[in-house]
Image 1 (spheres, one colour):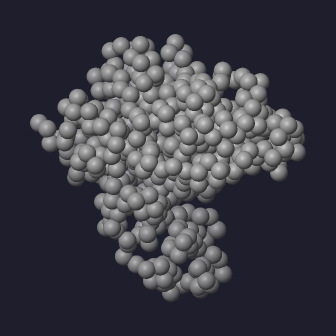
Image 2 (cartoon, rainbow, N blue to C red):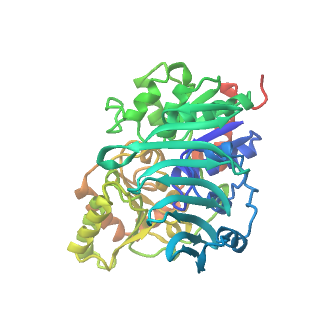
Amino acid sequence: MHYFITSQFDLLTSAIEIAEVQRLKIFDEIKEPAKIVTRNFILDGESILKKLGISGRVINLFQYFQKVTSKDNGEYGTNQLIKELLDDQNFKVKGLSGYRKGKLRISIFINQNKVYYVNYLDQFGFTDRRDFYDRNRLSYSEFFDDGGKLITRSYYDIYGKIILTYHFRGGPSNQPVLTLIQLKHQNKLWQFDNENELMAYFLDCLAAEDAHAVFYSDREDICVPAFKLMQKSAKRYVILHSAFTEDAKVTGNLYPYVKQVFDLGDKLNGIISSTVHESKDIKERLPEIKSYAIPVSYLEDELFHECPNFEERIPFQLIAVARLTHVKQLDHLINTVILLHQKVPDVDLKIYGYKDNWNNYEEASKLQKIVERGNAQSYIHFCGYRHDLSSVYQKADLEVLTSAYEGFAMAVMEALGHRCPVVSYNINYGPGEMISDDVNGRLLPENDTFTLYRTLLFLLQNRKVLKSYSKQALTKMDRYSYSNLKVIWNSFIESEGIRYGRP
């Protein structure tokens, strides 16, 4: 089995998790069994997996030890469970709460017509315990001290027995710090000091059950420390989704997590990058590590046969597909569009991407203030996260990328796949492998906002050039077709000798 490892799936499905879903499809086509492995626990995560079409294809660390499956829907309907929870002769029931001697002792909270969590309060009004339910089955409980600080979190198996407990103690600013993890498994009590040790044990369990296990890290912070601690023999690969150095140059400082990757030694079988350029740079930086180039995503074959009508595009419509974070340098684009508006009053910019929550959404706040100061709210819009951008790419005149660096620039691939020309800084890594300058877009000197302004002004005033770019959008994109990516992965599996069932 091939295991693609990430942190979690949530409502804001990131590009990394979308890439894993797409990879599942490829491996199904080339008849290689594969599943996704997640570490973090997400309540009602099954509903998200169903929406993504991967129910039954994900192994979560907690649910693995809990013995919970995708088909497990709990024993009770919501009304029956509520009735049982409030069935205490000493309670005076009011709605979803129970009172004793006039004091609140239990409160039930509902989410999407199912029990979400239940608070249990003592006679002095302190919340001593909070039970969380997943599909109306008791999943875990949290216990608190009289200051409301978390003491323990205990997870239950499907029979209601505690199998996993997290212990916490007071830390800086009286915040709870994880100090011990205890796991009851295989008739033994295991103790771990941190989640990396628990994750390593979990992966060892998967490897022990599957002699042909192959692990792929899609998130280094989750996987690499665990890879280093694993005891079982298994093939391990790291798939990089971003630049491997801080400035995306071969001689730059390694990111801390990448340094850990390089230090894995014989516990690493290779690094997979999305671009040929980065793969070569990694090989130059550390020649002893096997380095491969496999695009992280693909274009459906049907896109190569479509002939969209350029006249259906919205004139002067610019788009940017990027989360609101500093590395995307969206301020370059926003300030440029504010200047453009003086020459092209009909210019309109739509930015698609969720807010990065780092430092209390500092970057998003900064960008919004730039728009407000420029009185540009009527033509610069923050559109938030959107799962499917196909219609956006099909209607826009241009996509613009102003990042400081990228790991692949998936938005460039998607835009060109829908015949939307791209103007991008010529940065590492990705744009230069997909954009042919003055053929299907423009590659500009990085951080050159003056050239960015002149280029966008020229293109918005010359629709014949845009139409030519749109017609030639797929010039360099054959490598990223679904059919070609199947060939690339098949060749990789064959060359590495990791085809399923091979002795």
